[in-house]
Length: 377
Length: 258
Image 1 (cartoon, rainbow over the protein chains, first blue to last red):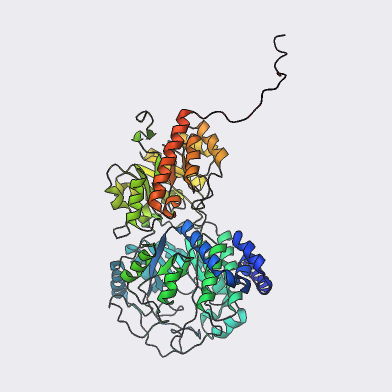
Image 2 (cartoon, rainbow over the protein chains, first blue to last red):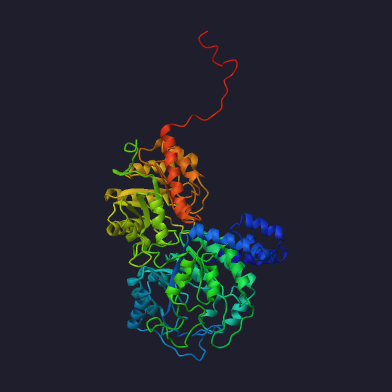
């Protein structure tokens, strides 16, 4: 398919990068007064001229989040089905060259793990695998979706790029969302960190979210792994990617996640240090420019950061997560076979108590099987 | 006056003309308090928030005496999904009411007129009391009335936007043409806007964000109830005619009858 439109959107992101250096406090004030869904607005908010206006940005982000999502935070749990991976992503704990015990959940184990997540009260689950490989191929993932959809109204996948027919099959089986991060929109950096394997194909990865939307997936989650490349450029490109998908696939949802690199097995260190203040500013800038898009924050982040961002820009959060294969049924003892380390290991009760204390309602179920329709977008 | 001024939707009678949405509150207890403070007799609750868990909104509302539940199909992006959601909602809640809400775009949540019309035709034939959420389109409103809807719910502005009655002129037109109740749904921020809608002849008002996102939702619910009641009272009392047309010193009609 011709992806010139998206390429053009990303070019605009690169052009907007120049605005970031020259933005003035007056421009920041103007954008704060009337933020728009355009990359120019975002560039102004990402500039250092906005650093002195963080409190105003946060206040605005909270009001917009409250207007569009209410005083609620939607919760979900990730379930790693397998950590087999042929990929050579230098930043990933599951990369093929890592000394890592490999395993996958078998049918009965998938049932048991899902039962454990269900027992926590959650009704929204995200199934993850590594890149496509014989141990965790499409049929294996499809089986996971089929099992999960029997019990969970909201089932998403975060796995390898697939064909449109494969995405359509997942939709038929009850999958409603695809999460797939480009990791970095910087082409040279992308080639550098994806050392081998199927993920080396930048274009295929960029294309995958809309391939899923064409297949009838209800929503896609996209993101950049902040820390791999110039974070301002990444944020602008991510924004343009989201806007492109939102406008072209107007019957579909777009969600945006903001993962940042943290140390994982193998000792990869981030090229760019992403501080709390910077990440918060990016999330608030996205909220101001895209008031109605779900913004997601995972348990990669520390409790204090998660607490401060809940309902202030962020509308969707993972909780009680395990990033090892399985890990729920054994009470979270788990092994050290994690993709990345979790910085918020609070249990669900403790996390929900925090939300309540902040005047936010945790929402465990925000979808229904009656609303699963396979019709393409 | 009270008895003759009941709100009648599909043969069901209500004393209150304020309908609350239940989805955006900080917790269920606050939501229930707001419903009580508003004196609501009809509330809407999304099927997708029906759950067997602690975040269930259906059962706690079903336990409130004198409250009728109106499941809504929020999340549906086409008629098929909405019909399935309506059926599931009726099965669980036992209520014949359904608020048909079909928004293919999950971001701005604007209702799809074509899918909404199709779903309403089907649901009306299946004995639902059908209340469609629609853009403020006078022609669509009449088409839905003809299809058997019990009321129409035009939006004042986008859901959650708090922009008030941006569609006021179209809502006035819908009211002037409608034989079924017209209920303004979505976009309101202040009780004064609810009063304005009622003064214009709306039969009822539905709010969610305006109450749930207020600093004090319970007090705001009561404020909306008073505004709706005042607006209705004013409508019944008959507003004086608008305008300050002065009478010309030399009457323009003086030549008549000469």
